[in-house]
Length: 242
Ligand code: HEM
Image (cartoon, rainbow, N blue to C red; front, side, top):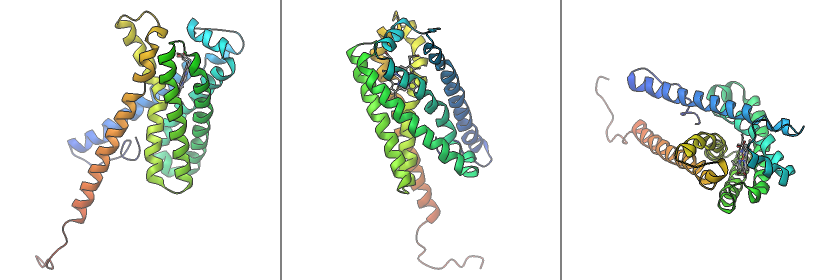
């Protein structure tokens, strides 16, 4: 999701694929993040007592733990919608101030939204297993995001990039969760709460694994290309054609 994820490449069919697949992926990520964020904005109406299109079980969670639940549900969407823009190399290189500004808001939204999520997790509508899944996610989410921020402050940019990928993989769990709900219904679950003990894990573990695999693959490619570019140390001066 960083440089190479949304990068430009050269010509040729393979290069074209390398160029367009990441772009389509990034585009899809933005669209899904924006849709889920816009849909989440209905929780602002709950502040005024309007429970439009809110699952009765989630309404019960909010009524039980209003402060932490709304702190999470109103703030976390900011991280979801800002995150993708941080990965576009064009924005990062041409507008570094904007990248830093969005970055600060992203970290703040993750920390506030994550603390709210952690405090809401004991009340999760799916019971104890869902509480454990969401609780672990909240701790990892805040921890990874804060570590990513500390590493950029210390000038360790490689770590910053890697940790932010993991952070957004967890943030994007909000999208994965909502995409998995129709699958849950198709598999025979009768409500969100009944499938939530599973969703509390399946919404983020695959994202984290994909980022881990992608980062390992990228590191391997980089070390291979470095070896290729440097080439073997010449034993004798190359005199061909000179
Ligand atoms: C990544 C760490 C996250 C954790 C640990 C977490 C945790 C939770 C928990 C425990 C609930 C209550 C659900 C239940 O009772 O089953 C919840 C609901 C909710 N969360 Fe998160 N969440 C996270 C990320 C996000 C993000 C990034 C968004 C951005 C859209 C978000 C938006 C919401 C909304 C809108 C609800 C209300 C339920 C719904 O509309 O589906 N969460 N979250």
